[in-house]
Length: 217
Image (cartoon, rainbow, N blue to C red; front, side):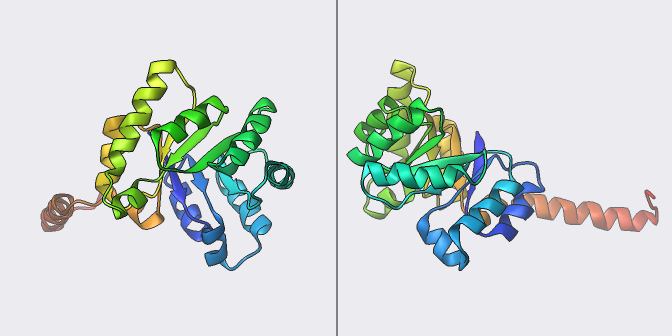
């Protein structure tokens, strides 16, 4: 499974990129707003920090406007992935961009039928939102499983990018189901390494090592 981080905070991205575990970044207008910086400036800096796809979202609601904005975003860096809404206009823009070889991330997916349409439109990534479905008492992980089965049935190359991830269990379950990518908030991604037994074991090892009075260097 690929790990993307869902943020526009370049400090978090730098820290995670240094681990060698980061495969890409997703942003959206809300995350750009939180950064308090100009969008193009933030996106350009992120693209320099990671080699993988960096999702930059259009804000136009018509296909023509989306394509104009996409041209501006593509010019920022070679690893830009255009993030489009899952609407008919968004799918029109997706098909045009796909035909040009531009990476696309079709976002705000809440049903398997929507995911099927995105794949037929040539999307590089489809972003089903797990947490937001959970918020309305619908099992978000069921959607991941449905999309996985449909894509496998027909050999679609669109990658399932599990989004709106809230917990470590979301990440584990998406990996078990077969999601291709998980885009994860920085705190959740960093938290995947944590386990109380790891901490307890390390503490015991350090105590015993100190008792030996030795030094490795």
